[in-house]
Image (cartoon, rainbow, N blue to C red):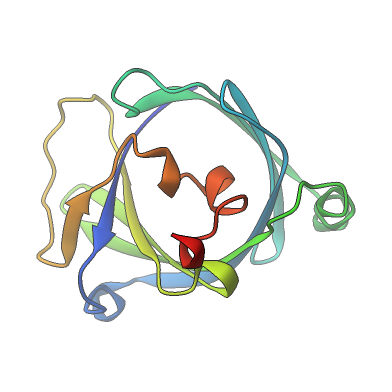
Length: 155
């Protein structure tokens, strides 16, 4: 239940040509305390409730628990969320033995595109495509929980 993840900005749209699938995500946060966030997500026709703990010093690793819930329950929970609902399209791109997830944001975060890769170990190497830009792992401005409070357009 420990998530190990690195985040990067994306410097071109060529990832779209490499994507094996994409889907729309709408998500909100019931709690955005830095030590624990509680997220409600609708991904395609699935609902999820996710709890994340505080990250380590590098921001690479943190506790994550996720449970699938009925979409109708996710929609009802979304009504209780803090201000700042996030909308994005997620693209899944194979890269070696990994899948890179690229999120293209909309609304107040329009213009922001972030790539994430989950790893088995913090020191694990991976094949980095040429469209992967500056690493932003650990920069809390790029956490979805913070993008709802301080959208990209306000930076």
